[in-house]
Length: 211
Image 1: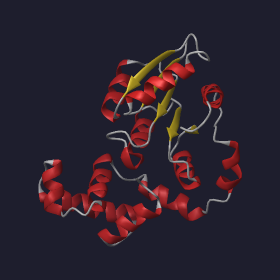
Image 2 (image 1 turned 90 degrees about the vertical axis):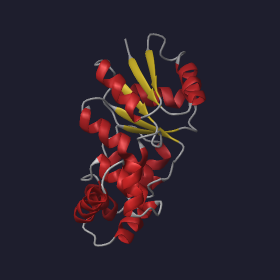
Image 3 (image 1 turned 120 degrees about the vertical axis):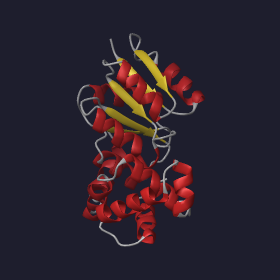
Image 4 (image 1 turned 45 degrees about the vertical axis):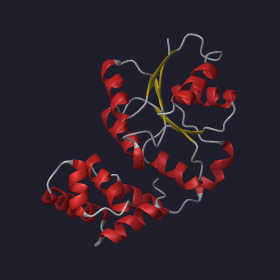
């Protein structure tokens, strides 16, 4: 029996996907979560999940944090990102960070079902029309991703606040920590990303199209 976890914060999409997949996976148990915390809770309780269908921008999962966290905690569980963000750069980043597949939300139901079967069988899957473009994504992107992957979830959260224009004191208030802790996080971020300023960190996030 196949166990699929749909991790997406839009209940209408989860319901639509469940209904669409039912004819193709009649024996499947489809579970749902609406954020990173609830996804991790289900994964901790259900050790037999065969595939996670992961939205990039659900709460707690922003800036690839959901994908990174899940891959670190459950490296043997296949993850297919299913997203409305379909740029070649986003797909390249997702695959570089360990996803087994990228499925556009605009895909036909039969294509989604086919992708799930292939990913569950150990293959990787991306849209056919994107394969040639992915091959020419430059090496700089891979290097940037390598550095970004060194960040902890807390450091990624700090980065997101930096990008929103918050000062250290404001970030400390939002995260309920001291300003000294935020300064330590920022120092670690700059060191890991091999940059010197907060502005460079924000520009790097823009370059990676983190949204």
